[in-house]
Image (cartoon, rainbow, N blue to C red; front, side, top):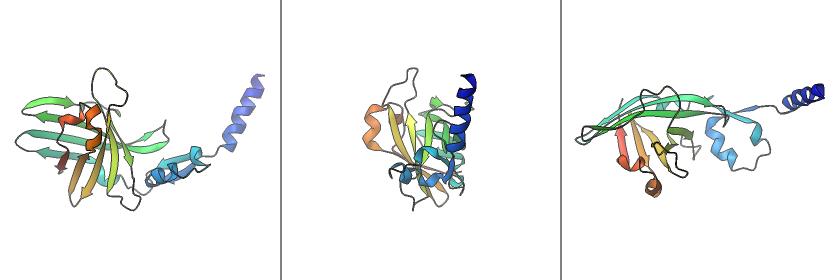
Length: 175
């Protein structure tokens, strides 16, 4: 029996070939009823995330926000993604600081909803609290315009996410 189970595992591995696909096609293929979809592994083969990565800063009379955006492979979802650690200071009070974290946490994604516009991607901002709340996630669009990174929170989703409501809805970051 033990050898039979091993044989099944080896056989299933041989016949379930992973197919590498560019990460910018994930949204398109997830909506296409493609029978191979479960075998796709979405990698940033064309370096489309590169323009978003790095350290970004915003400061005005009320806010100081630092972002650190990096790329990491998400094993569970079989895709490269972008992850964001941040520090949010409002009126000289630090409200959020995930910069010391060394792993993916509250802001993750990297979905290109329009494959013809690779200058805009979306990530999801989870509510940051001591207790996880289902549905407390807001979509954030990141756009590269010239040398800036524009952060826009989808206003329709602010009601359920107390963390998202701490931020201005649109922020223009620089390096």
